[in-house]
Length: 80
Image (cartoon, helix red, strand yellow):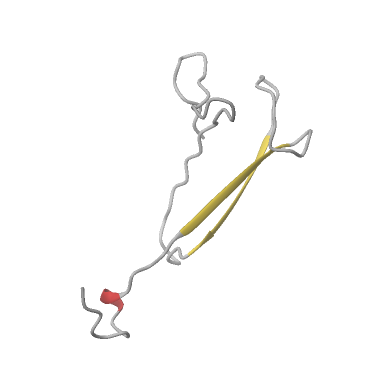
């Protein structure tokens, strides 16, 4: 790999960093109970995205104990 021209946009490697932190609205902690009336506040931070571009972010609820996704009544992972 050769990076011959530091000013050449086509030779630029962009690093994207995305982090997310969900908290239960009632307890203000990352521990929540599964139920029909639960509100989670998910704060997303990011750097390195290109202005004017469109991005989509999908999140999946995970069990801390098992490391597996939490599924709905249909057996599919809960994704938002």
